[in-house]
Length: 384
Image (cartoon, rainbow, N blue to C red; front, side, top):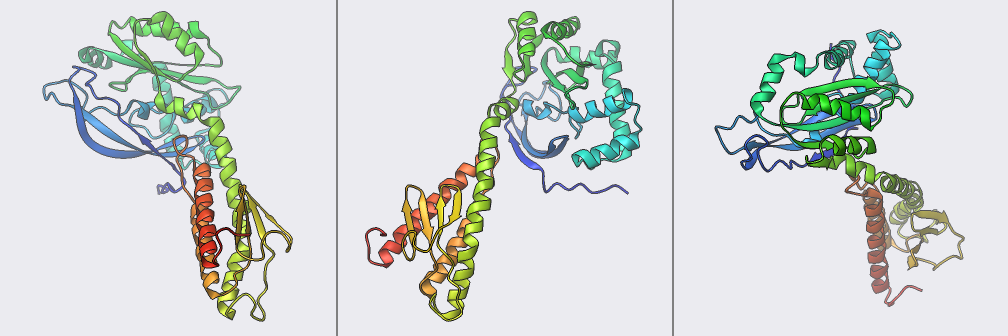
């Protein structure tokens, strides 16, 4: 029985379709439909949302049902769910280490969390062998379709699942998705890639563009062999690589906010519940927690003499919370804790959205509003 996939942990990615002109006849394209697909990589799954566009010329020989976003096929074969890194690892384990399909499937499940069957591993290995052993110049049917298409846009990509293992390189046509050249190697230079590009040029089909990531050896090879052809860096790869340091720092900030601020709120949540139950913070049996000081993303316990006796002090990002005085303040503190916890769960989609920074700013606005509200309630312009 097939095991159902768990897509809850997949990272959601929105890919915009930049194909506004038909890649076959240069006519304008129009929106066709919106779709999504789940992709499996060694470093986690992605739930990708994208638009498909089609040529407005009904007589055009453009591919059906239309044009997909260029970034959608980077790192994965057309009509496949598993990334090139998965194919490369399966091929390496099978060819170089002679592992069985069952052993490879177990390693992918246990080591990388991939929900994959033994039969799927065997099928992907067959795809791996087909790419390496069937160059397009030896397949007249595929080559004929490309010649009828009249032009190609090259996509150059590679996957190396192990640092000391072989990398799987792939050059394909972005319009049709057809693999043109595929090879494995442990290391390669610009001349090696240029040689493969020359083999594609021998097909005699005009090359109208190149898409790749920002590796220097690819840029050098394309500049040498295709100096007049536009070369675009993949927007998805560019943003992901450019934002890696920022994304890591933001992740640490978000984690710190959740751990420290969240932990500091628990005492006041319990105090507000006790105060509401007993009619105020001074009621018998109510344990008043020591004030907690929040400085930026850090929350630390402070002595009873630190800060004001009650309420909030916000100065230079320093906030001191104390137990509520009455039932009204208890309800306010409960609402504060509920809002703060919702802020700490702020979702984000790096690199374009930074959940850590967003949560930090939202918490600051919440504390500013709370300070202003308490000052008005107690008849003071500013808290002491």
